[in-house]
Length: 263
Image 1 (tube, rainbow, N blue to C red):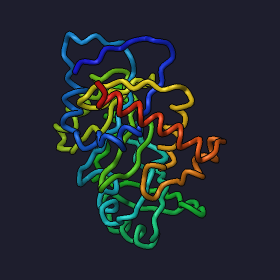
Image 2: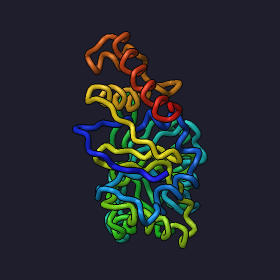
Image 3: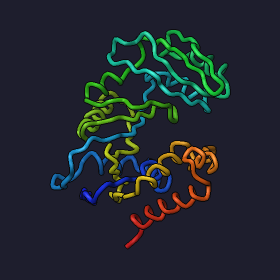
């Protein structure tokens, strides 16, 4: 379905909750066809985009470690801008066994040396110097006009959140990955100015400012995940009661279902 952009005043959309309700990430091929190859006659407003992508390759940074430590949560704190920037990267690490994590670092072919530079209650910061065997894709991301917003580990690979001035930059980067035998899956692509394409249905969801804030906060805090924040914790951050939080989210869900299943 082609998407038609309408300007009807200030519009807000629910971003990540759509992932929870409609399992967008399971339709990677459909998303690729929808977002990277729109019909030429479709009328769209020029807008930058946010892409959420997972990349995997045996020679990508710390691939062996990511696969060996099942409860590992890592976030890259710094990214090399060029292929020569290999002295060291900083990682925020959370795991139930730092001993296991550090043991895997010692065996990882992409790691030359490492050190724990800071320890906190919930996580640690590691500085890792990489070997020449590592496959660095960040410089290519920059060359393709993309900007890295966040990088976290995901299912033995890396989940990238990228900003793109247009969709063609993302398509070109995906082509590069295919040429380098890097597995690249696009899980989500949405407009940076709060218009989201929801997979095969191509629906635009319009929320009020407050509904967007509530939905985004709840998602960011993991409210929709099994081990995420409770309704009381989310409500406290939003300075509302749990019952008010429930009311807001019920209205958001109602709009979602009406958009997707209504007549």
